[in-house]
Length: 574
Ligand code: GLC
Ligand code: CA
Picture 1: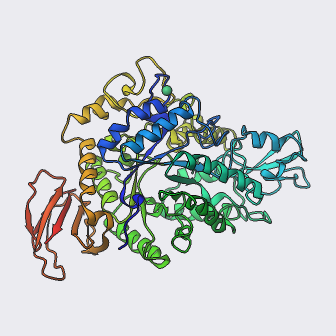
Picture 2 (picture 1 turned 135 degrees about the vertical axis):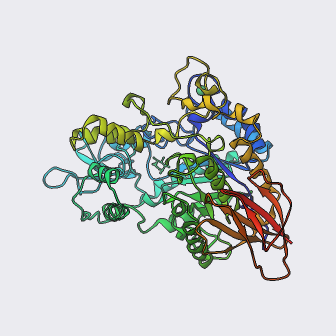
Picture 3 (picture 1 turned 180 degrees about the horizontal axis):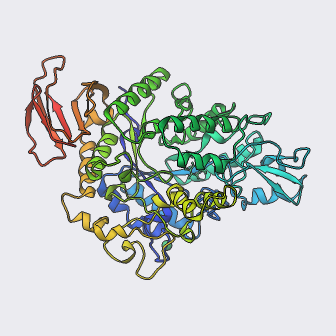
């Protein structure tokens, strides 16, 4: 196998800047705070950071509505602070990738302010403007995914503009070459400063169907979301999933994407240092012919389940690795189980099962599967979702929109609307990082009102300081596993062979490279097992090198390996 690139060897850690570390004590995370925590990340065993948007933003979509692509949000610091952060990360051997939001800008971006100012403004065509339908209504029946109609009427010029997300996020018109030029220049600005690549936001939404045909479903977004919330069965849910697809099919994954990604890739390739692109999309077609589009796309299909059962994981790996292999033997997988858009890992995939043990198994899964893992800040201390009880605390417009739409459009009682909104809002999984058992979880000084409330569970050991001093903590488990992985070439570069494929209790597999063969067993059940492996060749013993239980580490015979309930077991095969 050829030499691996840095992004194939590291573990990524997503920092959500507003919630990671507050350096100046104003209740909002910032670069000064992030710089202070770089040693923490290095010691944890992190090799690269994905920074969620750090640009100036009116915060209608918590930073994904950008009003200046080549500056730093004042509440996070200055460009000099950013440079110090980047240099500090590099000095400690960590790479940094930024979030690049291509589909839309904020409605407060100067480009949009110009565009909306008159029909003949030179930037008019930078966004998507259409005349009203003959009855004066929206040009077609498209929805945004976040707030009802995809069309917003603009009084000044008498036309509608299109937005796939919130109305404060007008879509750029990527068929205009000036838009591409301006956005590529923004990317170059950060590449020139030395950033190592980008996570590309929502790439599937960049182009729309040129004819803008009506979709065939007669349902509003509020209704659809409400039905998702109230549906009882998996069949109902699958049916709603199909409706969702029909409603958005002309608005996503349209022609032109691959050419655009190839052009963006060419921009990165002008730079030295193996700059990298990872796409927020699960379609592996974004690898292009293997080495001409994105370096990675997330394996989101793995997450689309209530329970990460061995059967589910094996099926996912079988399909995913086969599809990637068909593109090119070099196509590289990328796995994740959590980010700023979904419930926290500690609360997911484990209904009714012991959360702590499963969270450890899920980390082990990320660190032993083939491909690059992405972790989300706070996972390492087992942070949990915080269900907000007061609509006034909500910061994510998705939650507030659903709340008001359900009450006003659907007549849902307030209490029920609040209950749904609190589960749906992404605020629950974006609360400030918990550093200590101190007021505000040590995120901000006592008495300061943080931008989202701190989860009070910081007082019951869900904080960094308490876990640092406890060898059995989640944090120390993360540290141990992350450092362990760095020493195991087979876990980084090895191929993947599933074993005992009929087991519904445990997921066992081999990772094998020239230097090493590893046997990984993740027991996702409460049953103990005595397992026998019949491997080809002369292999007889398994030298256990990592296990999560308190059973001692030593040599096992391949024909009788004892596995504890919910255990992570990793051995070198000899
Ligand atoms: C991506 C981001 C999400 C954001 C959306 C619109 O899905 O991850 O947080 O709301 O794009 O930019
Ligand atoms: Ca601050």
